[in-house]
Length: 315
Image (cartoon, rainbow, N blue to C red; front, side):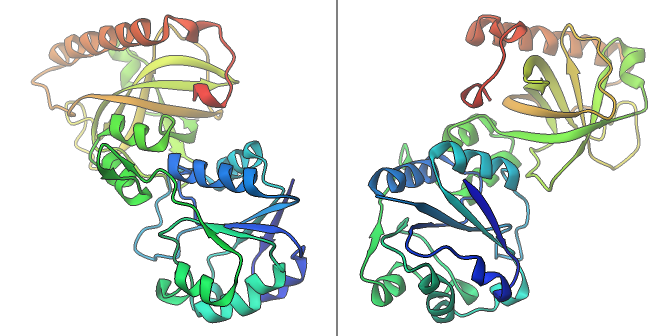
């Protein structure tokens, strides 16, 4: 597997010709994306190359569902041979769809071109599957699973679910549990005083943030998983700050994670973030939330999380 960065048209000489192509942004690599790439792999004889961009070409939405590194990991596991990452630069943003076909896609001398029915490309997304079919005679449009219970599966809808705190539907559409990655930093240590020490996270990328509230979550560190509850918000009971933070209490855990990278996996929203009258009320509610988290993992995961090493499907 090779990952090739295309930062400008000067890098187009890196292209390896005579390959099969699968095209898309694949933001989040949701279940439709996964099915599309898997089918492309199955239908390809010889090399399969994937073309994507490092960010959305839509300037009004730069929040991501999955980091570029994690997307590459998924592409590799499916069996893609070459991954071409086009930089979301002005040059490519302003390139017409005709020029993209003649100056970029044509260089691949593709045996087959695979894409989904909604694939758009070129300046202001003016190119589509009909543009491709008018230029190339080997375009295969794969009608992958693109709805769930009558609702269209798309990255934008998944992002909306997450922003609204509807994690369970987002996870169903993704085909895995939504997660963010970050570095553990020092906080105000208030959790320690309450008896619920938390890790504070500085995100490593511009992830879509769930709405303020308390979530059943899981912390992944050193390839092991730990049940947890995560608060997103500004802690109104103990702070006047308007700054939103991510704080996670890990059940039955006392290791020092400062400066370590961890993943926070989201399962379910428990409640809104509430301003309590006093700290005693807050601690009472935290105790209830902790019990809910423990029951959730005991019910659905049979306590495997305490010892099991993980692979991708567990995340």
